[in-house]
Length: 502
Image 1 (spheres, rainbow, N blue to C red):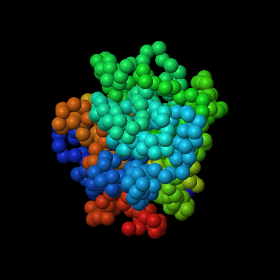
Image 2 (image 1 turned 135 degrees about the vertical axis):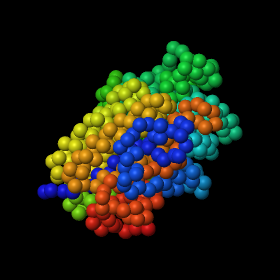
Image 3 (image 1 turned 90 degrees about the horizontal axis):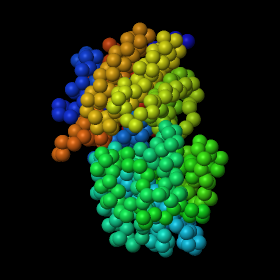
Image 4 (image 1 turned 180 degrees about the horizontal axis):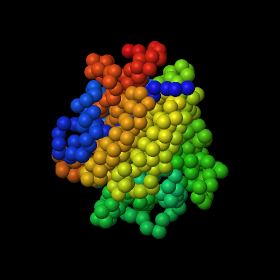
């Protein structure tokens, strides 16, 4: 069967910003991208805050960006749902949490709270940690140990002292909680099966280390003096550390699953074989959300049901689908784009391209982009796919390094991929749309400090339509990421479900 393919390209972390300073996108040499902006219709889409189900003025991220693109509607984020439960008080009577904490209190064991100590709201939110501390206090749990994963990626690179000072103040004010260890998220939140990193964290949480610091301040002084920023601080025990032992309870307060499930698996999977570890039988292991259906954990909030996503509607109308990304963004074109569902829809083909295993991608800013493009072109030439979803991770992943020159190189590599891709799409009489999921590479320098800026932004993203049949006026309804899916369905002459109609 011959198809006129519809190709949606998501340039991860590729936002719009007019200013030249610190803007890797504007300063990159990208002749093809500059050409299409002059030749084809485009608009700008909101990709942050309430437009993607987050708090007002909060930066966007890959998770909610792809979820919104795929759902074709604004889906309240887990962050917003949890915040609402805290604000209305229902969190503090959550049956799972209260009953588990009460059981532990009666047994005289320790509650361990672990997760990313950050206010970025991408993977976690420090307000949630403080809410757990209040539940522990109200229930009467005396032993509460905190294991803080340090950010420096969605926050400034050396911002940990701000959050650790606030944590100490909250523990004192609430009356419970002791910081026992710190871990850079590079180790604690790996998602690419670098088991040496995960093993280092697990062993730090369950076995006494030879070296312990007398305070987090002395630990950070040591690491900062060695040029190590928050994200890359190795698993470190303080002399207040209480190890996770038999019949203790653990709460993992990250709400985003993709960088939490790997460490969680080591704790709860009795058949775990990726490295030798002593299995510890816990009283409970609570996660903020459902990290994975295969993990035996208790969850604080239940998953949302998101029906009639873009892929589901296309599939129901006999449209074949091809989704591709490298490891770093594979979950986004599958699980998140599919409405928080792991399973592919009918007629969907998924391709995972392996990411390189660098600490960051400064030395290889093209990442696996060439391989992705090669694979898509091969598939386009077979001409049996209706809808393509392609993610290029470069602008986001290299941008997070804070290295401006490398990010410029990444953008220039993307330009080369886009021209190759477009030639293949044209050859097959298709339409190609280019968009982003959130901003990042357009702001690489902190305007206030002049330091590298590694976090996401609230800037809008492009939506460019490469087709001679689409005019600027055809984009009038496109204001935010949620508008993309129904617009695509309209172009593909597929009925738009009521869930996408606003």
